[in-house]
Image (tube, rainbow, N blue to C red; front, side, top):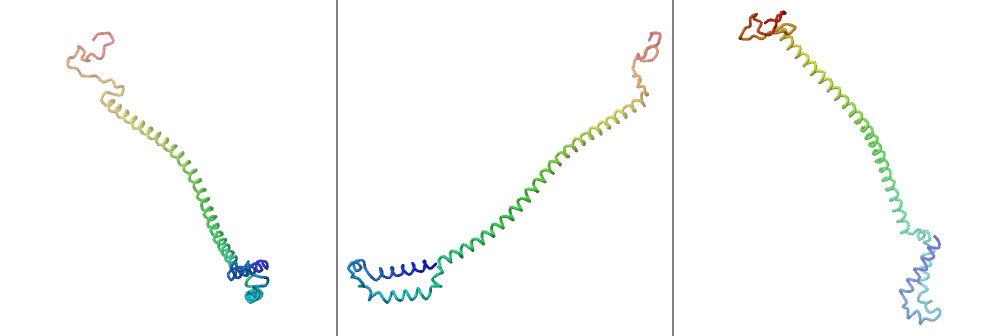
Length: 174
């Protein structure tokens, strides 16, 4: 830090000297030729750098950069915290998605099983209805023809026994 102040003093001296003197004038100068004209400026610059060393030690540009770096660090810290909270939320959503996937697979299996059961029940009911239909038809036929369903068809030309040709006697004659 002290070196920086010393070099700043030398840089200011050089700037002031090159501002006041042209290169031709510097080449033509004799030893201690500028002592009279430049000694007051040198003493003022020395006094300034000696009395205000504490304030000169703090480089304003460096302090500004440090302040900016600190503010950027704060912003980055906040952004990282927000990002971490979003990552946790995303992990929660991923877990929920996995759970929903498993539940949907279970639902799909149960749905297929239920569909098979419902098809069986539908066929079962259809068979029951068909059975009742056949039973009702049988009962109607049994009422008309008897339980052995030996109905005789009535024909217009009666045979000798009036059986209509459907039944034969035991002796083999009609």
